[in-house]
Amino acid sequence: LLPILTMLQFTKGGPIIAFQVENEYGSTEKPGKFAPDKVYLQQLRELMLNNGIVELLVTSDSPSMHKTAGTLPGVFLQTANFGSNPEVDFLMLKLLQPGRPIMAMEFWTGWFDHWSEKHHTRSDEDFYNVYER
Image 1 (cartoon, helix red, strand yellow):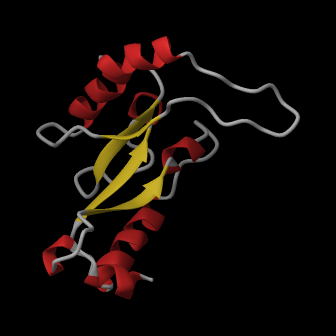
Image 2 (tube, rainbow, N blue to C red):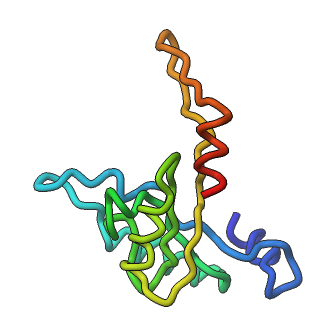
C-alpha cells in the first residue's frame, strides 16, 4: 500500500499532506506495568521513510492523560483526541512540543455503543458548547 500512497503525496502532486503513524498508542500505557514501545514507533517511521514517505508524520492520543507515551517527541507531530475540555489537551500539546502546530485529530461528537449495553447520547447543546470554545 505504501508505494501507492507514496505517489499520492502532496509533494508529488497528490492530495495527501500528512500520515498518521499510530492512533491512541499511548492509551496502552499502564503505569508501572507497561510502557508503549518507542522502538516500534521508530520502526514505523523508518518503514514509511524507506518507502518514500516525505510528508508530515503525526500520532494522536490524549496528551492530557498520556503525555508523550504514544509518540516520539520531536520526530512526529503529536495531535489530540478529545470529546470535551479541548483547552486542557491543547495546553498540554503546547507544553510538550513548544513552537509546533496544535491540532485536533479526533473531536468526538458522541461515543460508540457496545451490543446489549446502554445507547450513548450527547446533546447538541453540549457538543456546540465544546465546539465553539
